[in-house]
Every structure is written in C-alpha cells, then in structure tokens.
Length: 249
Picture 1 (tube, rainbow, N blue to C red):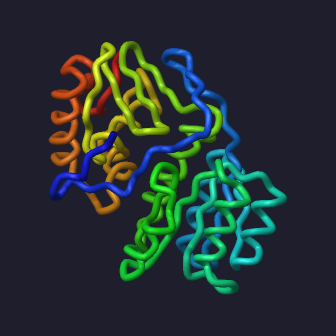
Picture 2 (cartoon, rainbow, N blue to C red):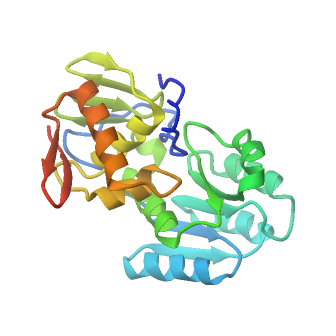
C-alpha cells in the first residue's frame, strides 16, 4: 500500500480503481473510450482546454452548470468527468456525489479553489479521483486528462504488467520480480506516467505536468527518477539524453 507522502513530495495524483481484477497482457494498454465531460465555467481557459483536446481527436462535451453535468453523465457515457466545484446550479458536493453514484467506475478530476481543497479531499474516492487547484495551467489540466484517458476505464483493468514489474492499481501495490515495493505517492504517480507509455520516451516536461500539481523543474523530475530507480531497479528506467525517460521491461 502507499505510505504517507514525504515532505515536499506530495502529489495530487491517485491511482485508478476497479471492482474486478483483470490482467493486461505484457507491454500493452487496453483501448479506451475517450469521451470527456468538461464541466467548467465558460472561460478562456476552458475554451483553450476544449480546443486542445478536440485537436487531438478527444471527444468532449462541454457543460456549464450542475444540472447539465448529471444529464450528460446519464446520457453521454463519459470516460472521464472534469468538474468545477463552483459551477452554478445545485450544490456541487451533491452533484459530485451524484456523479460518483451514477457512474461509479468513471474517474473525476475536481477543480477547486485553493481554500476549498481540504474539504474537497474528503469527497473524493482516493483510489480513483483527482483534483486540481484553480487557477490552473491549461496544459496541466489537458495533460492530466490525457493521462487518465491513456490509463483507460478503471473497470476494464486493474493490474498492469511490464516485464517483471507489476502494478495493482486497485490497491496501489507494486512488485518487481515478485517482491513488493513500497513507493511514495509521488513515486507511484511517476511510475504510472511512465507505464502509460511503456517502451516510449516520455519527456521530463510532460512528467512534470502530469505528476506534480505545482510547476516542477527538470531537476526535481530527475531526483524522483533516481528515487524510483533505487526501488524498482536502475536498469528499468533508461535515460535518453536530451529527450526523456523510457520504462524498460
């Protein structure tokens, strides 16, 4: 299981969860529904996120009030819900609970002002949902959405295998060569970002956006890569100089 985050290393990323364990074949990721319900106020930032995702072929349904969120969840089969907790309409805590009840296997990225984040954490399913503090960088939200879509619906897979590296995303358990490995939340988030693209080079700037809720420097990414190497094996993460990092089998 995941231990408490180390000082200065906290991440808002949480692993997906599922009600059934289904193994993914080695070095493969399952196909995913890529429909996103984007429940944000109609601002320039939300319009930019919408354009960015659609330009990449992601199906997006924009919604600007709480009642529309519930209707869209029931009728549009989203793979992911992005929900601003200060949308007009019904109390958004009630809307969030209704979304979780209506679509229990659909992850939610909740957008919140900083002063409400602690209260929001109690409402999130820690093994499935995520949150982002507002104001946020457009590319950060887009990156988190892309990461969630690559991971796929939680109900379809909970055990990821890459060579002798195994990640049980339902419980946050990691093992290497059959031996359990204890990771901090930030190390776990970093591993999940790498395993989402096994064998592919992942640039450090993308890891920084996907793992840390605050801006992270390439040096911080390098430090946590070194932490992760110590735990899963130095040869499992290859550095491609000037490009990024590759998770090896």
